[in-house]
Image (cartoon, rainbow, N blue to C red; front, side, top):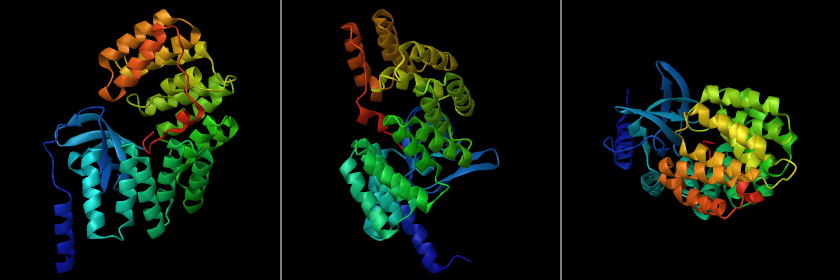
Length: 341
């Protein structure tokens, strides 16, 4: 039986999470979960998502959206909002209950998505103070990575893993840092741990594939890319990630333009040449080989269909290629990773 007090709590939560079923979400949008929800495929529950988890929409069908996190499946669009809307909701929840560690964590994840890193660190600090669970450390680790503070990031990911040895995301995130630091064997090990915990986790295969590719173990990299593509042909793709890594890494021993073109071409084929981000990667790969005519051609094709969020960066790269310059990352640029990736 639902008590009077519980009815009051549910009523208050209802006020704090206004409905927006008519919101015009689009495929490719990144949204934030504002109320715990199930990811379902048919009658099967694939995953539970808590407040603050960010998801990408791969399809929309009525009141349902197909999203990708550790697993893929359908959720109600009532459970998600844009990051800007989500911040308002979580802030209201904190004002109502200043001891709500989950709301602070959700704020931290959302501030991270909005690239407000200092605000995110402050929110994660509060979440950890109130409830030192693995999620808060993982979230703060992502912030340190965004700031290029890789040792702090590794320390927080390690804390997260110690608190929850089944934290696949923390293993994967730490693997991303190891790749950025050129510690490829450690990256392969951490990504492998993430895969053992969550075999349907595409990012883990992608991270391990990058480690294999850096060590010139291309056959192993292809195996992981194939598995990644089987899990999620839309959105994240192992072939695309490996191509980007091989073309842009500051590690000269790992960089390989010809292989980057090979992997990027495979990614584009898998996505029927209609993913602007992957066409952008192909352009970057051609530039690394010195074939700037092809780089310009594919960057222009990418700009015809690329998302608004990526347009400025792609336009910048087009101008680089027109002037005969390659595009490379600094070390700190390689460790940016959200909860979704």
